[in-house]
Image (cartoon, rainbow, N blue to C red; front, top):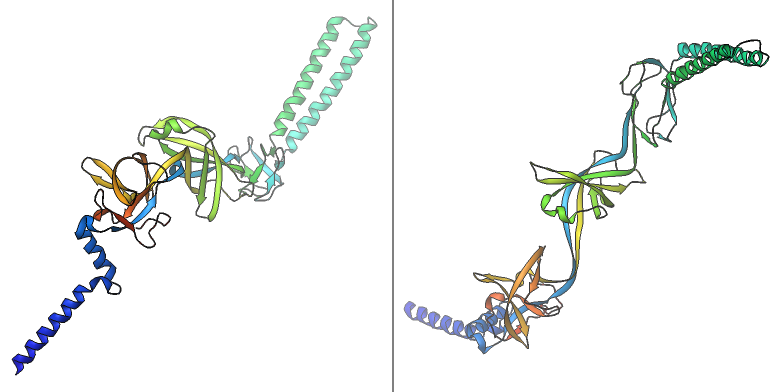
Length: 367
């Protein structure tokens, strides 16, 4: 009795399995996969379901990605040429100053006294010279004596000019317009030549230095556009222009330094910042691009399947540059043609193909 029941169950399962296999193409969810598999086995007896994409003609820009460091357009550390005690500080940290603005004065009492003495001597010498000229005209003194008085006047004037030049060293001025940094001295401090007082940076324009490989040297020249990003401002794209290319190549890295100038009117960039740089150095229109999924590599080269009159046509192609997900085709295809990007492995030359729903020429290539 138990054996008979088992035989009945086996027979029923066999019948159900046979019926399911016969209707496998109509099953939900997995039915299309069975249908596609059957079509693949039948070869030319039925169209092969594929995804397609058009051959696109676009503008292709060659870019170099690099990392760069910002530098101030002009930068200097304000120091004193003479030793002296700070008597007057006329700036605040972070101020924007104009060229020629007085930043600091040193105590110059002794120099001022020397200047007053020299000015008095010059005044007395000038009076003697003027008196001598009158006496010479009246033939009361000789011309030689007048020349001696003129020489004494010239020496007195030179002494005044020398002291005034020394006096200017006791007054520190901004050599160019820019922004001041942190103050390093206080009123009453004694400074000596070379002691740092404050930094001054012109950051209205920042210089951006980065390296490019020597292989791109022939394409890099002043005037090229660069775009840069900073981690401090992730949503801000900074635009600049290549200003100069270094005359020397680093023998270790085989790279050349390129300097770009980036406008910084808002003062967001500071010297020493780290930026990622994109340098566009080559623009070409009419470049043919196909999805990388369409390209099949074989021993004798590369080929794609183009669809012509509903059939797959094998085309040998030559590839050029690559972009994420795309490959440049330099020969073998024309703009507007349609190529297979999904189901390439099941396609044979001359086979009929059918575009899968949602995989037409206007759809995005399948991954």
